[in-house]
Amino acid sequence: MCGRVIVEDYVGPTLSQLSHVSWLERADYARQLLEMAQEFSSAEFRLYLTDVSLDNFAVDTKGKVKIIDAENIVLVDPSVRGLETTEHINKGIGCQDCFSFSYEDLCGHTSTDHNFFAVCKGMLSSTAYSQDLPVGLLHSPPSWVTDVYPSLKTDVEDCAGHINLNIHHLPRRREAALHLHSQLVNILREALLHS
Image 1 (tube, rainbow, N blue to C red):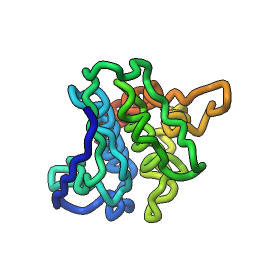
Image 2 (image 1 turned 30 degrees about the vertical axis):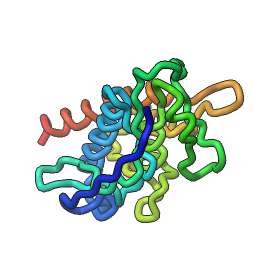
Image 3 (image 1 turned 60 degrees about the vertical axis):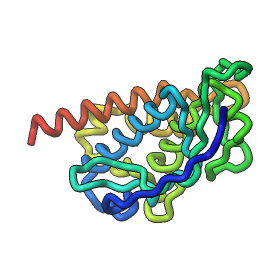
Image 4 (image 1 turned 135 degrees about the vertical axis):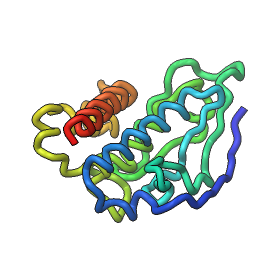
């Protein structure tokens, strides 16, 4: 029902090594990371990332983001009887600005927002875990982006769980991640049309 897998690969420079590239390139990497989070969270067997950093993802020569160090992935079979069917919300309990989770919670639910928390809080938000890019992968968007997509920053922080997180409100990570992904797709499409 639940186990661990180790996989490693070299494909190119890590995301932390690419922190200097243009905002549009970083936006495309963020789009791909959100797609991974969605795919891993809804696959037949759920894969939950537990070691999330810009150093564990790399970009190949075609611009595709890949996991290169996946030594700590939790694998869950959601078809096992007895699992909680309500989505588990990772509240980041245990520390304010670090990546915390419970194996029991991941393995005890058919669904969780864990991967969105991992990607958004760990790599995209203004308080990302990376020492190489502590302001997150989506820092400093061009003014035309913030003018046309004023909710972009809010969606990043909502996905990370920074906004509306109190005793009465749970993070709206999945919704914010899907909206953020949609905005990034539109931004990248518009940039391509105008280039």
